[in-house]
Amino acid sequence: MSFFEFGLKVSHKFSSPITAQAYRLLGHISLDIAQPRAAVSAYQQALALREKIEARDSPPIADVCDSIACAYTEAGNVEHAFKYLEKATAIHNANDPSIMSRTLAIRATTCLRAGQAKYALDAIRECWRMQNMTRPDRTVKVSQAQWGHHAPFADILAPGQKGRGSGARITRPHDAERHLRRERP
Image (spheres, rainbow, N blue to C red):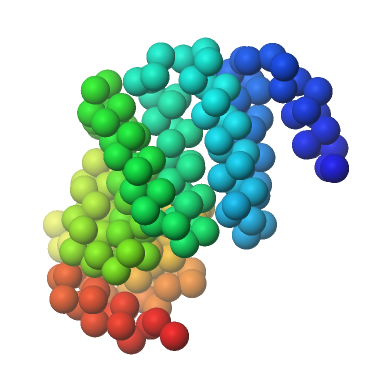
């Protein structure tokens, strides 16, 4: 058991925003070391704690749902990812839809992994629009630091950016579908 996990076990009996955030951070760390199932578990703990102390339609609940969706996407379980994305989207729409760009970035990645190129493009374009990241000439400013796990998706659409993607310029759904067919093993 790591020191971090030990610390979480000690404080688990307390339902507080700090404990919930600690579990969420553990999930982030798990994703960073390519352990999406461990991330799902940590995020589920964060959600359980948040649901004890927050209204069920509060933005902190949406944030954890985003994280769970991201972990499920990384684990290859897009069905579960979409379920949590729907919950996060509903919460954001009930509160402040202008702050759901992260939800849209995760949705884009999930759609891409599900082979739904058109919906992936729609989601990432809306995400970029919300963040004012598009320019009149339709090129995109993307950085690895800003996008984290979603950077590979953004890189596919943003030529010349560093990352794991191909750098192919894809602006139409049928181009994305063709690119996906070519990139799959």
